[in-house]
Each structure stands twice: as structure tokens, then as C-alpha cells.
Image 1 (cartoon, rainbow, N blue to C red):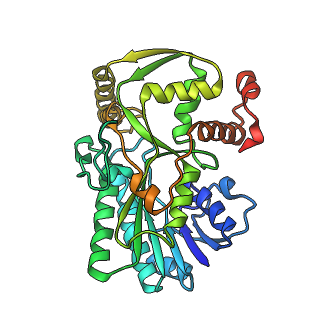
Image 2 (image 1 turned 45 degrees about the vertical axis):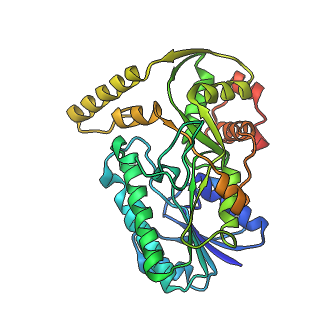
Length: 341
């Protein structure tokens, strides 16, 4: 089998590539010029230079291949404006779908996001049938992913395109080219006084997501969406998981959501004055303090999604990033086997 993948240098993409290699696939990965290749260094794959803006080049890259996995996306990293995400998440997805259609790809897996569905409570978590409710956050990322998914679903309906959609929750694990969720983990283990907001999310080992994504190449129903979700944890429970893996308890201070939202509004005001993005704003504060829990039951049944404990993912994520960024101090060095990832 021959598989073309976008987003191969990212956290999920690097783990998908490893899973594809284990399955004997010949892999070609789209990479932008100057990309950080540390997550896929030494892997037996072909690199294809380009980006999602050039449909003709994407067609050239995937022509003659059996499958396409479209995992590339612009993720927040402090941005909130819709226009910051449209080129990659919407137009880039459209270009990749059209290129795959022209190349007569046997199957394409589009990696969307859990945020395209409405999250629920722990007692009644969100599913693939939960109505989208993300517009209330005014998040450019969430809105762009939702609109891109709606476009893909419409194309599947009109043209009977062989596309399966997977919707991962918050992924934790090694080989990421950016700190992502690990940045929060690192801050937690460095600060013994932790301010813990209300709310919670679903977390999953990125390697479990990679397995289910690769399974989607041969399993799953065309035009269906599959939430790749595992562990519904409140912010306090996730913080406790992190400190438990680290082996050093900290002091957790519960802070009401309205305080975080006030700080977020302050961030908006600073951004308005400076005309620059700030690290924490009202959009991010509302997302942080919301409850957004999901069920991965459908994906477990149909795609064979593993739902392994999150502890190993936390450990291996830390080990990878500590090594990658030379974030070594006495505490971290004593607590982690740096080469374990």
C-alpha cells in the first residue's frame, strides 16, 4: 500500500507515519520548506516539498498512491481570528480533496476535530450526533474546522468521494514538532502552586489516534465521522494525573471560571490596544473553563480505537519535549528516562 500524508511533521502526523511503516506502507509526506523534521528524523519515508495552497502540486504528490491521510491543520498557538485559519484549514482542505479526487485515490481519511461536535457532560458526553455549538466561543480555529468538515461532507454527498472523517480529542504523546498540550504539562510540574479552573476535556494518547486513523483506511463507512476520544477528565483530574506521573504532588488552588474569563477580557483589551495577539484572551478562557466531554464508543466499535491509560502518554510527551528542547533540570532529569520516547 502507498499512502500520501499531509501534516506529517506534526504530533499526530509523526505518529501516523510510524504506524503506517509498521503496517508495511510506502509513505510520502508533504513537508513545507524549513519545516521542523525532528519528529520524523530517520524514518524510511519520501519527503515531498510543498504546501496546501497549490492543488496542482498536491495532485502531483499523491498521484499513483492508494490512500491519502490529510492531517495538516493550522492550530491555535495564540491565534483566534478566523482569517488566521482559513487558508490552511478550509482552502487547504479543499485543495487536498480536489487533488485526491483527480488522482483517483482509493480512500482518503480527513482528520478533523472533536470541536466540530457539541461536547457534553461526563454523564452524557457528546457523540457524533451532538449538534455543533462552537460558534459561541468565537474561535477562528473551531469555526474553520467546522466549516471545512461541512464542506467535505457536502462533497462526499455530491460526488460519492471515498472519504472517512476522524475527529480526535486533545492528543498527548511524543514526536510533536511544537510543545502544544505538553507546554501546559511542563508548566504544571514546574509550579508547585497551580491555579485550577473549572471545566474539563477529553484526552487521548496520540498513538491510539494514529492506530484508529490508519484503521480508517480499510474500516469505517464512507461519509461517516468518528470521534477519537478516550478519557473525560476535569481540569483538576488532569492536573492530578500530571503530578502523579511526575511523582511530586503540588498544591492546587481552585479558581472560579469568572476570574479566568475576566483575565481573558483583559487580554482582549490589551490585544485591542497593541494590535497584537496575546497568549490568553476571552476565547481561550471560555474554552478552558468549559466542560467538553466526548464518547469514543463508535470509533472503538468500528475502527478498533484503543483507549489506553493516559499516564504513559503524559510521561512520553514530557520525555520527548525535555529531550527536544533541552529542558533538563535536576527534578526533570531525576524523574524521567529521557530516551523513553
